[in-house]
Image (tube, rainbow, N blue to C red):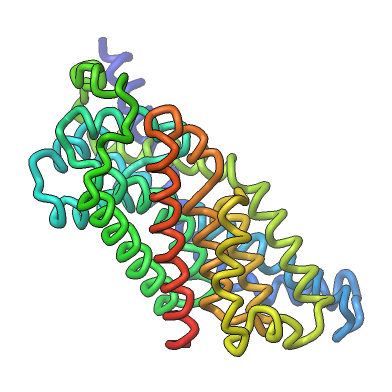
Length: 347
């Protein structure tokens, strides 16, 4: 018996090891730029100012920088997410009036787990619980668009003001779009079979968690998310490095600059049918900005890609009819265009 207790104690101690890695990550992050410059200038001995040199410098510096930021923040958010489950989220939204529900659903969308594959069960669980359709859409818009990956990368690459404004405008889109969908009374476009399913089937048993369990949840979140998005990060940074090193200064100003009034709607329309995630898009956005693209245009393109992904639309088609999907895309697209112009006006 004593041996079993000792083994259990050792397991709990082992759970806390990710916490000790955070200070190491901070130290690495502080000296990252100097390390990248040392590799490029002293080890590889590349000539300063050359296109290849600056592209390699961009890639060597940004790749570990973004991965470090992502790992630390996903770990922290994973711990926070352990306090929220789909069942708790559903219960928190039950019985809320339309506009208050839209706000609450959008806020919960930032901190609760969401992926394309969970769209259908979440949608069914929300609708069958009596949560208004518009409130449900506020959650479905906010969860993928304003996730921890997008926020941490924007903070690390562009600063807290840009990250904060992105979160604020993303919430505004989610709240407003959900409210409009709710006011239009579009429940008739929900597939009939959804309403025939009993809510009880989607209720899940929740176990009480210790802090050690929540640390473990943070570790699992890092393994799960980083293992899925690292390839997008590397690919995005590689594209960004090529743009940074080889595209002439201010080249993008004529195409995606503030003076090109049509650039925002064109960027959004191009982005809607595409599919990527924030991890792959933000390094590309960073490089485009360095070549003269306007911040609002670049971020509007990114929001349209990650906020209206084609796979999510295909999956949602199983539970809602085509007219509602078209209305949903139209409202969100219009909101993103407004946000693009807003960013271009402020910055």
